[in-house]
Length: 249
Image (tube, rainbow, N blue to C red; front, side, top):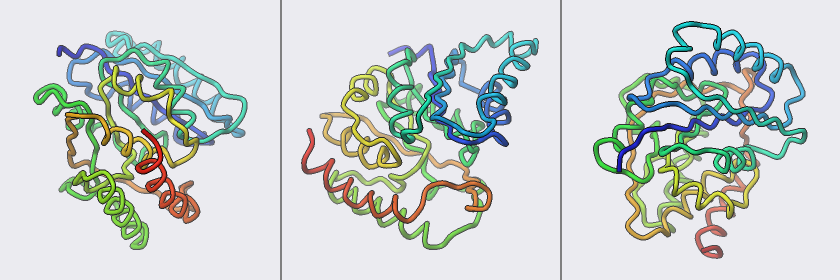
């Protein structure tokens, strides 16, 4: 299959300090020759995220270097906060790219890693690619020990049910063949961070699906810096792994 367009879905909630930098990095990132479609889904932000976003887009569109790349930009503004999973579902349904990539708005995941994530599609005809924080020699910020343990435990539990050998199920860098994720998207149920175990369970049930992992860099944030996922989400993930593997098709 010849891949021509890359859709980049950016769910965002209350990231007024970083959204401008995120958009700039995404728009200028190396997309391995693919035309970019950038879809930002604001999930009911209550700070200055939307104003900063519109200002940054206006500035970048007038930049001659950006203009030459001519990325298509779509903005979805939700009045009510529903969660990352709901925002991603809306973005997936709006996308038209041959490849669809999830980019968090907080820059814990670096757009400069796009070529690593796209390589399995372009060279190995992959269907799904996960960017793993745990098999990489790229820069990795040292933070919370127990977060790392919980992430590895949730990945192991997910693997037990899916029979996959992933090293990082909870990664925020997930990339999909466009037609595949758009077929799955209408059935997605989780609205918050349960997207990670749900989508992993659903793709594992697809016969002959080709899943790859690649090592990525990671610049995690502290809670003081704005990190949003917490212990409650980890506990919910336990049930979501069981539910979406055993009780959904």
